[in-house]
Length: 300
Image (cartoon, rainbow, N blue to C red; front, side, top):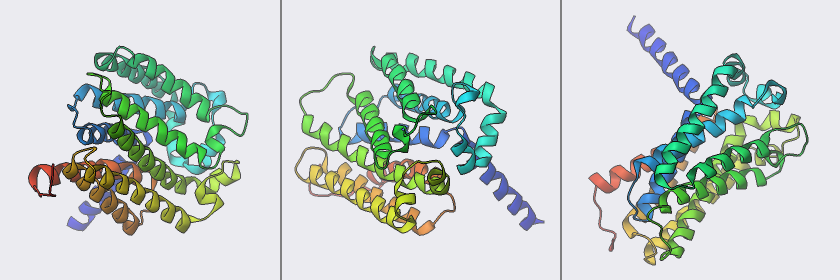
């Protein structure tokens, strides 16, 4: 009986994990974690409003991409790549479209408390997502090799950096901003490549070129891990040269590498949601390391 109950509990947990993925919860947490990382690395106050804005905005934008503004924009590639998610989204499409609007308005409202121009950023993000992946005309930006991942990486890094440095404004440490922004863009770029692993067959069938369907699974993992290593190296260099705090830079560089290697060794059947969870786990691990396991790296 205990074994049956445990198995049932595991199934329920898996279903809940998948459902959260359908609703873009994991990628929203990923964006929130990016804001936390940027704040800690740049030694900025951690503003809960900025974290909340990132979460709400990302959830709204990704739900928009999945549910589309109208049924006529439904993408058959989504159904082929993620049949369970697509069926869930289609079944609840009217409620999810309302959720997109509510989340966007909430992001604009909370974001305005961070900076008066934040609502404009909310509009730009939604318009950008529509241009990125909606419409019958191909190739869309979403269909272009590497460009699709670069857009996601640059967009999320810009959002995180903008929310962290918006108020009070900072212009004195441009080198640190560039280092942290570049590091975040590379990490997101690599994670986006890993997310494409789940879609490789459907993407190939519908004309979307990605690293997994142009190369193979092993090459994609090697490329993503190399990019993560470069991002970690940027952090190490920025920390050792004094651009950013040495301790937090070295710790986050270490947790970036550790969680990436851990994900590779775990070999999950579906990578996307776990890749989204990876950054959140890396931030949590780094935070715990810094707060509860102080280590002297020879400088602050």
